[in-house]
Image (cartoon, rainbow, N blue to C red):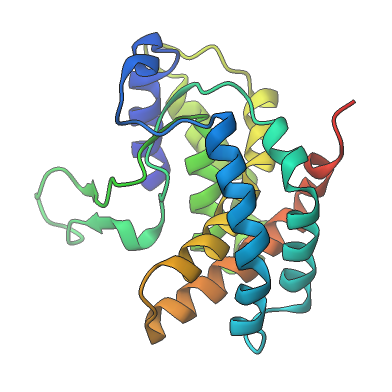
Length: 221
């Protein structure tokens, strides 16, 4: 349900050039990228130190590798295609009780990170954070395909192929990992928050490795 609703949102704004004129939707630019790179360089060591006992060795290594090559990843981000939530995870979804007639059946909250980006951003962020790695691996391609089918089943049909979507789904597996590092070190600290950020980092690190998304850290040719 969550990915179907994301597809409906994304389809409504896919390719909408007026999004470039909106002052309130975040969009990656050189200044923002430079600020993010500087923050990652400063915060990643503190992130690893704080959560060392909870992070997998894989997550620790991946965080160090990303910071060393983050500029390469940002340089390959595709042109924005639609309006995305930016923090599309289970904590920000409210579901109607099973069997109830409450409409809509799903409400998405916390829109402070709304952005003009690629639709795959929300999809990879959600799938990577919502499931334990074994469950994700068993269902990942099926879930992304469901999103793609919903995205392309009605007008206006976005000009996106399955291959392009899957490529960018892999690319944006890094998005949740980046959020785990930055947000954990900026927001007020709580026990529940610590557990959530460790889970995000570990799950997204596993997703990155499974999808071989480290290739997006290579220097552009």
